Image 1: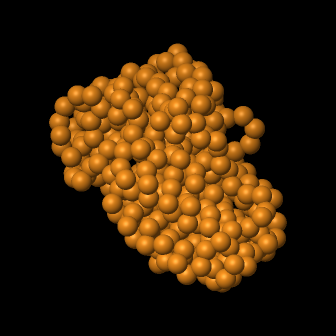
Image 2: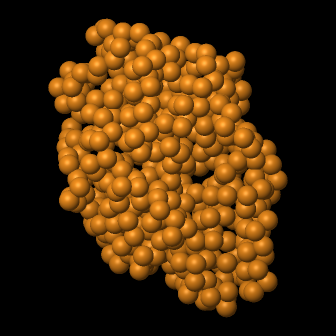
Image 3: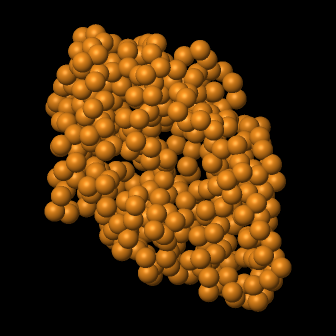
Length: 431
């Protein structure tokens, strides 16, 4: 499904329109969005204008970190040389389908955005990165690129690269490593002011949704972009909603839409106990907190963030502790295996959560879980372990009543229910 929250500041759905049926081919794309005006060759004045518009728009990355889009571009611009534009279509978050949806319905908008960035940075190449367990995406993108080439729209060379379909492979430093032919694992980056490199080239990494927004900003400008959303977090965003809902899928909505309203759009199947916000490294938000706007500053009040654009609705009948344990187990298995907090800490947290969900722990076991979270937090080589800690701590807060019961050895009936989560099997050979 695709819809747009109707608020006073909302125009029409921007990225996907009223998406129905097959995706937009090039002719339909141009009819819907109009042609993209680009200089024939690199122009420093046009590049300055474009980066200025992106900065004024307030666009932040839609891949998870929410980093200001213009800062990445200016960082690479200042480094000089001819960089490479890495398009992140990995979508390792199991509960997310927004990138696949966007590539399926509006691939030309994504590629327009990549071309805009490449022209602004005088990049020598665009590399589209997709997971090797979804080769259909690669075949689809190859057809799209062929269509653009036949229409004379292939100004910057584009390569397709399949990387291991792992949760961690979409982290930007892991992506850069994978494109360079090394294992796609995150690396420790204490100084984010130094541009990423893939091989000997500087690299800028952007998620497919971010690039689609860039394509629209290049067409319509920053003022148009800011007509929707909030003053601090303008624009629309794609969100994948799943769990106990009648209409799971991807929605496009104005940033700032209340979470409860988004859940209503999907049709909850019963009483909502809580909603997982941001993905499997995100946070639980309780039923009493669903009026919170889906926007960075407001979500931060509850220790949450927009993250990867994911909402999972948990019904009253399910056990939030058990579902948290399942996610922690998956995240532990997806470790890059590079540091102790991931290798040992995440497995320990998952074990502690399992004991709590089983009702096989008391005060000592609970204290051990709290201690393990404190030891792991902020000590990993990347942010992967921090996400698990954030998730576990939010579960202890939101499901506090059930936690107390489980600690007394009386687990709730929901602890034996099957999971509502998307949890793909882990293949250790893919590390």
